[in-house]
Each structure stands twice: as structure tokens, then as C-alpha cells.
Length: 465
Image 1 (cartoon, rainbow, N blue to C red):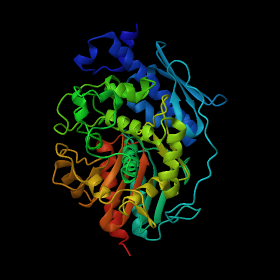
Image 2: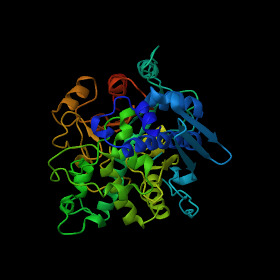
Image 3: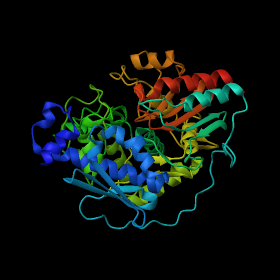
Image 4: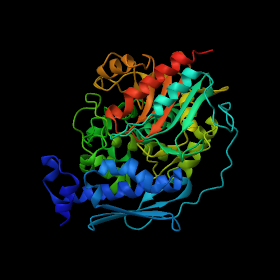
């Protein structure tokens, strides 16, 4: 029965995925874990209307099997339960500052968090308490185009746009139900935050880009994975054979990295078991496993558990940037899900982008090492089709991805954090500009064409002072 239902979930599954019932069981675990986790985050962290979120952001990914999926939001218990055709079920619970967690087996022990009073920000305020309306008619038209919805699927579902120039918001707009403080899932834009946290550790002298990555499971001198460096993990060329995370569609349920994020308690322990497919540095393959391992390195250097890691992220990054509406979610082992699961307000995503406009310096304090920003934006060989750097996507280079984006309006020096289905934090140093676009788009290229037009319109309508 479960095998038959799983086949209904993924009618286009690859032959390799259909070799055994265990793969199909994992697929339904991913589906229910995905629905419960994302609905939990939307309901209790973003605080948006769950049924609308399900229709807009979840059902299109499950389609055509969304009719077999069920869910129940329990506000009193702060949890969401998801089922799939009566053969699989998952439950996600809200853990406050630690975000939502899909339970696998017994719930983890409660985490004792010290009261947190944010330290004064080093980054000056970027806006006041009210929504910043554009003063230039051309900029207002640009925001209107960014929010224009298609009359039929695929829909764009734009929820927030924030434009920051010279350190101040010059225009922003939000969809109904969203506002200045609404935290929105960044998906893989979270990888860029992981880049920053690793950069902070490098600046503090705790880790190095070169040499063996500090993964305890790889310390045997005979283990070929000892050759993997932190730089390899950042650049997605570790050589680990651990699926790929470039796409988000029904068949993704069979990918091992999807199972890692939605189907296991200890994500890093799962990732560190992956074998090598090629020598480190020789094969570019975008997979969440690399960033989960970086997240474990952050956890281990911050104190080894969720409480100390959360305190580290607040003390060393979020508070200094003035990010007051941000939730980095954790797995049951206390590792931040740094591959994909940070929610933040559009303004806070913009604040994060501003760190990379100043070479990692806030006021008189250097957070990131000298040259870290250029390193993070420099292209990785082998990724030319897409234009990937080190935790960011980049227009610096002459690959297919860079040429396409430049031709559509994003300048050649730009680089950006990017998450599935249209999450963008675009950084343009030559224009002293950060543009944030959030919302679940199912249009081609994750709405890249429309976002590129937005950036071009902003540049044309409001030259830097």
C-alpha cells in the first residue's frame, strides 16, 4: 500500500529511486515532514494565514499528489501534523526562538535559553517605523511591476520587496498579510548567512578555509574525505556524493538531502556519512549536505549545542546588524539548519546584505576577514552554467548564468543570496544597492527575469547620491 501511494506522489521518479521500498518510504517521510515543517514555520514564526500559505507555497510543489496530503494546525499546542494518504504522518512543533522542528521519535530534551536583550546595533537604522513609500514615480512603477500577478498559473506570489540605497530604505512594499516585521523563509539564502558565520569564525582565528575541515568522523588518515576543506564545502566542490539541491519539485522527495532536512534527527551525522564521488575541488555539485556540515562546524565552535549556537549567532551577527525579526531553525541535535531554514523580515534580509557592501565592517568593527567579500563573490570553476561563488551566487565571471543575468539587468559586479522559488537578496557594490525580493514564485527561473527587471528599474530610477 505505501509503495503504491508513494508512486502516486512521484509519477516521474527515476529508475534508481524505484529500486526499493525504503526509497519510497523515505519519499513519503519527506513529503509529510516538508508539509508539517513549512506550515509550522509559516503559522508560528511568520504568523501568516496557514491555508493561504499551503495553497500558494506547498500545494504546487506536491502537485499532482497534493490531493493525497492532509494537515492539521493545532494552535493550542503550537504544532502541525501532516499525513499522506493515511500511510505516513509527521508532526512539527514550534520551539520559539529555535523555530520549528519535525519530530522523529522522542522529542529532544528542552533547551534552556538565557533571556536575550539585543545589544545596540553597529549598523545605523535603515528606516523608520512606517513603510517607506517611493518618492520617484519610476520607482513606484518598478515596485508595481514586481508585484504584478499572473492571471493564471504559474503564480509569482510576491510578498515583500525592499530597496536599500546608500544604507537607507528608499522603497518597500508588502502583500496583504505581510508587513515590516513579517519573517519570511529564505530557503537557500540561508547558505549566505552560514557563509557569514564561517567568516566570523575565520576572523576570530577559530577555523581556516584551508586544510582538513574539522569533521570528527573524517579524522582517520586513511579516510579520503580528510582532504575536504571548509573552502570546498563553501564552494560546493567537496566531492561528496549526497544528491543535489538545485531543484524543488515532487521528485525532490527521493533526493537524500531532502530526506536529510525533513526525515532525520541529526542532519550533520547523516551528511558526514556520505562517500566521496570525486576528489575535492574537481566537481561542482550544489547540495545542502555541504552547508549542513558547515553548520555543524559553527555549532561545535560556538559551544556544541543549540543554546550556545543561538547565542553566538545573535551576539556576533544578528544583534550587530540590528536584525530583530529573525529565526534560525535548529535540528534535534542542536545544529542550525544553515542550508535552508532561516526566516527573517525583508528589512532584516536587507540588513544582512549591507554587511557585504562594507567589506564586512560595521562602524569600527571588522566582522569578516579582509577580502572575505570578494572571496565569497568570486566564481567557482565548474559552476559556469549557474554562476556560483562561495555561499553566494555571482555575476562575476563569463559563464552562462552570469551572462544571462547581466543581459537582463543585474550588473556584472553583483552577487546575491538566493533561495528556492524566488528568494533574493541582491548586492550591487557599484550602485551601493541592496534589493530584497521574497515570495514563493513558480515562474521560470524562480522569477529571475522579473527580479532582474526590478534591479534594472531601480538603478535607472534612482541613481546613487
